[in-house]
Image (cartoon, rainbow, N blue to C red; front, side, top):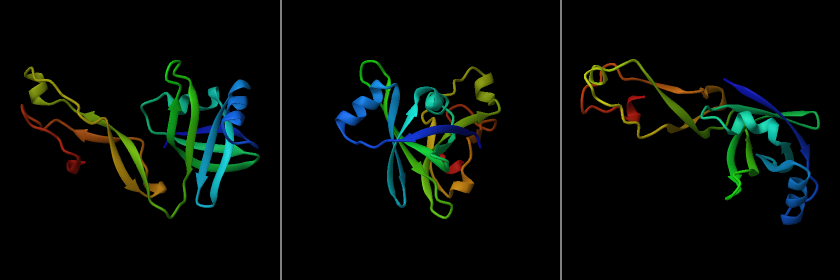
Length: 158
């Protein structure tokens, strides 16, 4: 499992004015949701860049004032014009609680249909999976070597 370490700072204020001041300082306002409640934090753009701008699934290890939290990115909000990150929601992982995550799907092998001139059409690039945090994988693989022309691989085949 790929883990990205992110350093964060606690934020005191909440709301529109506080978030605007945080962005003016070059930071991204964020919220760390957990079973105990939510914590408002701020992170740097460089710290979350490799976590957000990738098609791969990665875990975040957030360091807030010396405390380490294993998290996933639950939601990211982008500015509609500039595409800058304006807010991030992190969800803290709890060892015995199931979580719903989107895992990327990759293809393995080469089908006879592709060699015969067919085309592989990808409908789903990610699959939602409900599992414990210890069972999360980076990606799921579908073996397409047995697929012929007109055949399809279904989610239940994973």
